[in-house]
Image (tube, rainbow, N blue to C red; front, top):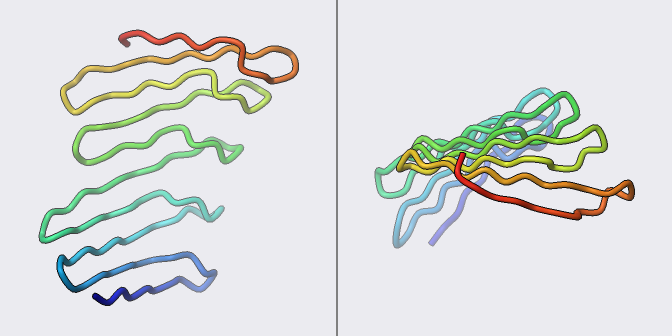
Length: 114
């Protein structure tokens, strides 16, 4: 089994390819701040793509897979995650909400169908 890696001019991993018992390859893309925005995984001819989005503070706001699975995130002014919506491939969604005290400590979490 052999794994090869390639990088861009600022040191971000661009590709990772493993050959041997099963062929697996990953490709990555980044935004100007160096945050990963895309990932392509190919294994034995099957490809899955993931996309990532961020807010102005660099906090992850969404993660989406080409399979239909996805997650969306919301934050308060202190950077605490206050909400998360998980969307499944079956169309069902689960919403989580989080509350914090003045010390930014998690005090409650609730979930339900979105």
